[in-house]
Each structure stands twice: as C-alpha cells, then as structure tokens.
Image (cartoon, rainbow, N blue to C red; front, side, top):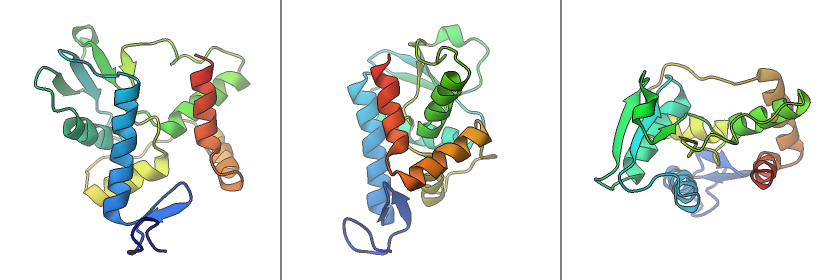
Length: 180
C-alpha cells in the first residue's frame, strides 16, 4: 500500500489509510499534542509522573511526553513511585482501546465509569489505538517488555465492530466525553 499523503511505501495504518514512517509518526505526535493542548493536561510548574508498567503504551507515552513537553518549569519523572501525592499529574499508559473497553465494561456491568472523575490522572494517548501504539513503538525502535490487553473479550468485540464500522472506537470516545 502507498502512503495516503506522499505515495511512498506505506508502513503503518491509521483510520483505514496507510502512511509512510514520517507521516505516520507526525500523525500520532499531532494527535497527542492536540490532546494535551485542547484538554490542558499539563501546565506550567506541574510535577508529572509517567507510570511505566513495561508495556508498549508506556514506552510510547514516555517518548512522546519527553518530546512534546519542552517547558523547563514542568518536572517529569518516570517509574512506579510510591508517593503519588508528590505529583500534580500522573500520566498513565492508557489509550483509545483501553478507554473504550473500560467504558463498555462499565456499561455492561451497570457501574460508573471509574476513570471519568480523577482529574490528576491523565491519558495523553487516548486518541491512539493499540495498533497505532504498536506501530509507533516499532517504527521508533522503542524497547518495552510486554504488550497488554485490558479485557480480551471486549477488545475482540470492539475490534470486530471497528472492522465492520470504521470509526467505532473514536465514536465511543466521543460518547465518553459527552457523558462527562
């Protein structure tokens, strides 16, 4: 397949389109920058903890946050800290698939969606799918220990819906944001 933008050889897929390495990396970075900017996730003088659970999502999160956040007043640490109260924001390795799974699971179990009300817990990859995270990590040569799926049954259902009805995952995210 050819890149949707420049017609070079496509190496990664997003929104049913293929992209060359440069255009794909730019697309993912642009989505994460927009998520941070529009939702004002990180501010001046914030102390930020990036949770590193060893997954591809954590590796991509760490890479992108360190690349995007250039403000010297923002202090960024990575790892699993015991004293999370020392931080203004906690960045968790959480993406679009995780958000959709968590929301649908809460709907199926008739429970409140637990991640809607924790303001200091931020998810800059919420607009990026599992497939995009894996492709980005591979293209950038990021090292990670494991790839984790939150709930395999619901993930399979969402993937099937996405295949049949492109845009399902982003529609679920829009629904989540409207119900906040």
